[in-house]
Amino acid sequence: MKGTVARGINDAQDFRNKHWLANDSKNRSENMMIVNLLRNDMGRISELGSVTVSKLCDIEQYSTVWQMTSTIESQLKKDLSLFDIFNALFPCGSITGAPKISTMSIINQLEPSPRGVYLGSI
Image (tube, rainbow, N blue to C red; front, side):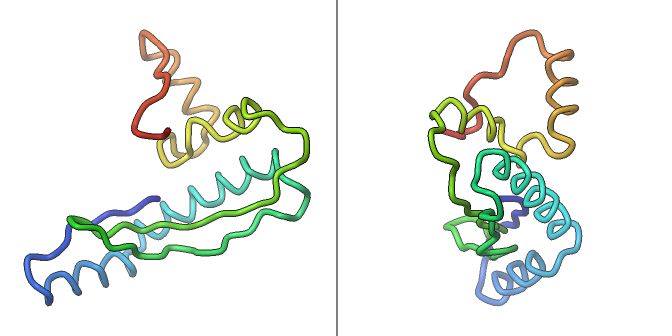
């Protein structure tokens, strides 16, 4: 999930906002960056060749916003624990951006305590 715009106050503005989000190069680029990061994260815990992007830069309608989302799926490797899965995927790339490992290292240096569970991720 990367890319958001407010719903319009009438049908015409709502259509324009949705169309703008769907075609905005900055939002599409950010969404693609996160898709690539998450494909990499998921690849570490998935069967070889099973990571697929089933939806790319879809625009979803919510009561107050249009949201750009992409869906990434895979077949998990056998014998993974829940800890293994969470360790590979959290914090989510849509929060950290890329490069994820360097970003988290900088955050750990700058912030006085670990973030823990945050931003509605669970």
